[in-house]
Image 1: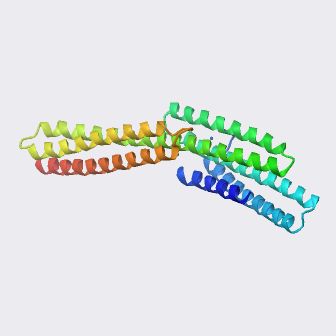
Image 2: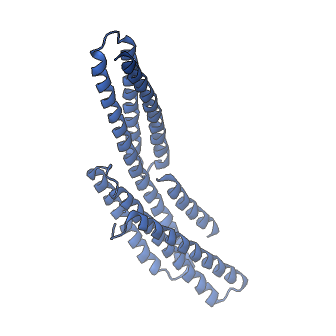
Image 3: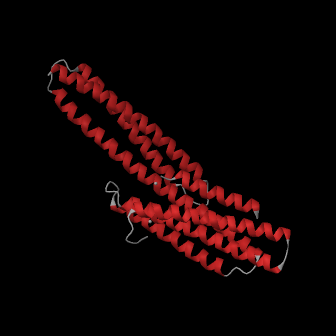
Length: 263
């Protein structure tokens, strides 16, 4: 059981680290985040009580102590499910309150959240039916599998949000480049300016290609398969796209400076 617990905790931590990237109520995102913090604290307390119960049973294997292990184990699993639910609600509200994210993407994320919330409800029902330590371990393993699915869904959705934001930035750079080019075309001795704009345009095109590659990788963040590898690949493409856009921005600023000097 100890090895399983470590694996479960590792998955939870991994999920929380990966996504920055959902059902709902009258909560704001800030209130939902606090609710998640509270749920995390409750999970830690429940896990501590379960560990104490197992230690007591190891020292004195009575029926009463065995029952205490089962009950505290169920409390610990339910607390973990409450924490997962609170986290989903918080992340969904973050997306919902962000005006930069398009409605179709919000709807897709909401659908994935609803699916995961339904899984949490199903697992709660299974936890309630646990009657012995073997069943407790079986439900625990099912929860690990469900967390892997949740991790995949949240990673994929986070990637789609980042792709959208990168697309918006690339579009802004394209507009800026186009406006500067129109001004430069009407100027004399504009060769150096056009060269800078051509360099910027090339970097923006490379950024677009890398953003598209990232989106293709995020599309593959699904089970079965290797979702975390695909997620990492998508992140790498976006990092490259970010570098392209930073370089493009530098060239555009240089072109702007030359335009001002020549005006």
